[in-house]
Image 1 (cartoon, one colour):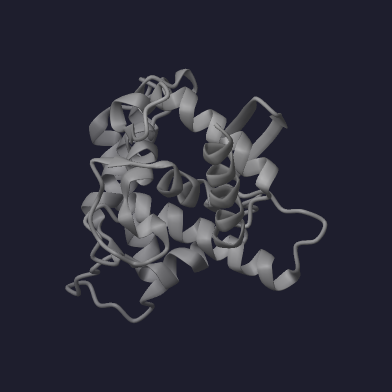
Image 2: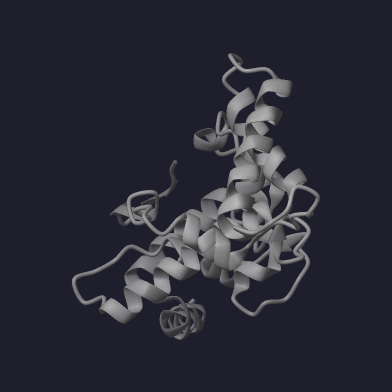
Length: 217
């Protein structure tokens, strides 16, 4: 038991530098990982599908897939995992790391960029570096049609109009017959430049036994 505890403490300390979480926060998240996985060593999609807070979220699928997206491990590798261990889980959660009074302006800028990249990856489902019209349509349709008050065709029309506006803003001299390939990360970052991210994407540590994740709108 003593050797296992020593190994865990070493693992926690090793992850502090990689994620920016404190040792105490990592321990907290490890408890949450064990709760979600049923004390298994790996986490699978079906484990996350059982989270009550995600049940009625219109982008539930995208949120779950984000945990298995290799791009969110900060090494730019494409593809997805079938299951993830605690370290991979922690790396994804680091995108939601809360600010502290010690967070420098440079760190805040880097953390915001990570959050924006995480959101971009959620919608760039094929990993080609662009959010295409079809990907954008899918996201808007899911968000709008979930309420039941807007039909799929209306949601699609709204998505097409929004994408046309984005295209005209990002490519001012685009002709009527020109094809807009999609929203690049740089364009996406510009679109969200005035959006306050901290209250929408954070993990809130309530006590030693619980950690709540928020990916709000």
